[in-house]
Length: 494
Image 1 (tube, rainbow, N blue to C red):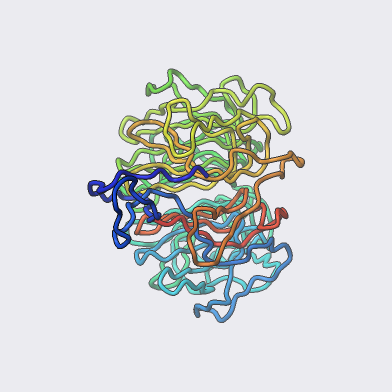
Image 2 (cartoon, rainbow, N blue to C red):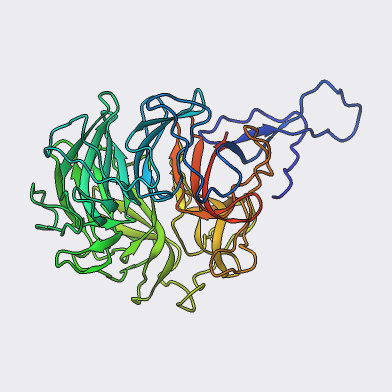
């Protein structure tokens, strides 16, 4: 980390920002007689806090469920590839994942007590539980989705949680790609199977582009991304799975789902798999623009309700496939994509451990030339000011070496510039793609400028009502540098 800059004596008041990460440092004013009781001037800093879980990999370590519905400091969920929500009280929720499963356990984390509670689903490992679908459209206490990982999720305007697809178990106990849509009401603690198939490998029904219909449905898939727009509608993009003909590959189809009508609409992209990207002109929206097919990308929705997409493993403008570092914006009003940042190619040499290098610039300083390297399975957040945040994933560092990353980036949607905020710009020596920085945990519960999660992918993320960024688990490096599944919980604290 770079040393914090000293401020001038008697600084003017610093305006309160929505996500400003302020901490006080001791800094004397030069010249003259200073008074020891004068408080030091504030300095902006970015600090991680290790909140809970282990600072060691947890491969094979049992999940601690405790008593159903009862929060306890000893409880801990897995933290690999689960779906996440945040409720109206600001509590964090996670469903399933593939760390010990696929699992179908539902957990709630209280920000007030800093404790986990196991809410529903199985409490054995491996879980391997089939879905209990009940009657489509009818909530029931016996309903529960089957164990699964890498699904997508939303929260509706009424505070209910929604879950789509992933890779896991259907009603018959078959484990593969799913296209079932579920709703969970935290008030009643009941699941409802809303649409899609109760069997794996459900085929897509696209219908007509731009036309909603009760028969429309995305095909079975995993590793897609999702958003919610300013009207409360849900959006789904990409992933890997089955097209309308039952052929396996990666998607670049964009779907909209209305929670009120409970209908899907195919909005953009192709109905065939493995489509290349059409980038057009950098910064210019056009009806012909569309990102290439991909999975393990990250997504955001800004304060205007526009949808943002970054990277993932997929197809560039030439049809080559590897880790991408392109940033896209989609306007629900104009229904057009804009290529905003990054490159239209996957890198100079397509193949193992090769992708576009990151341009980091100076830590903490925005610049037009800055851009994260190509990556997939990163974590993402959006702050109260509408800035996009990106952490880690599997991809390329500043030298083009591939591995597990722990770099934290901010993208300003107003200035259209990236800032490298913290973490390393190097994964170290390559180790078959699993090299990466170790975690620096510090003291549990105490923020420090030296703290940083280790390099990792497939972590779970939330933004709480105060604008804090939360990160859970993933596959990556612990405090000793060992690589494996993690269950550590972190916050990036103002």
